[in-house]
Length: 81
Image (cartoon, rainbow, N blue to C red; front, top):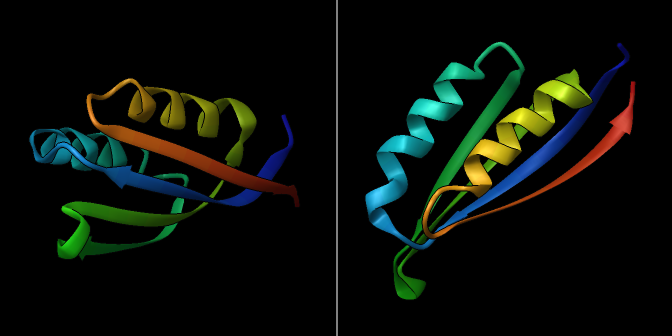
């Protein structure tokens, strides 16, 4: 299967989900090239931006699991490598 490079934006509104988000991201560490997290205190949310390099199945599995968490929103943008 063909590899894709892209970015995945994760918005966390429910602080109870932060630990699970971190665990899921760690489990997909083989496709994560880089990661930046920013707490946005004024809006009471956290923003995580990740650069990914993997198949659409791998990236889809990661975003799907993240998107099912309470108070977590996920968007991705991918290009062909």
